[in-house]
Image (tube, rainbow, N blue to C red; front, side):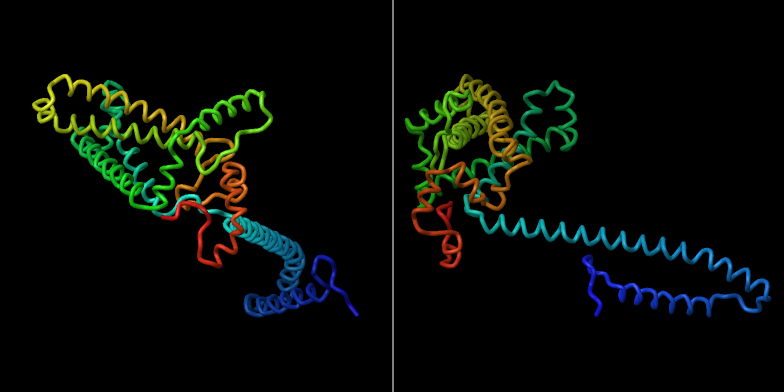
Length: 329
């Protein structure tokens, strides 16, 4: 009784392949051998085939085995990635609801458009600014796009105020985002932790002082940028109504706050959310609204404890059609 080798390939498998090869060779010889060969020519063809076929068959077999092994490895890697992705998604917690994600997408799209079309005006003497202007079709098109971004920023700012008042989750988050004395203590403890004077990091709830700074920096920036921007947009009405000095102040405030906002986004926000070594090359929370349970436990341990002590685990919540204590509106 024969047994299958450890690699799963048996003697019967080899014999089956040889039989199939023998049949194909027999068919090829019967159809492709030139007719009317002399005895000498047939002998020479036979010697040529006997010399070439073993080598060609061995090379072909090795090539096919290599291709098969490579394809099998790729398939296994793809399956492993799929299992990892499914496991990660299964252990994810919703951090941002779809409602908040859409607000954020409109906000950052408007800001990026404003930055790209606004900074070339501030640094108009730079060759790069001229190239950007030309890329967008000139100052008239750039000005139109800048105003379109301003309208988007204004509308989403007004809607977020409405969301923070009319929605239960908005009111909850707004209350949690108000700076408190504990935030100053957390910032000091974080600095002491960074310089090695404390062994443990401060524990955060739903929002850390970093996220609160992000939020209120945007709020303050929107107030300055929108108010000064509309004064610049409606120049004559602003000068007639408030005087030339107010217009001049608005122009300087708009220009300087734009640069400050850009630096805050690129240096502060992008690093904390995307370029931090723990997150690089970037977080997708803005897209899917989720963080892993491990991230939840590490970055928001106080909120995680509330979630854990509530007696609801992820599977039970999904079965009940409920969401974890994220941003459901």
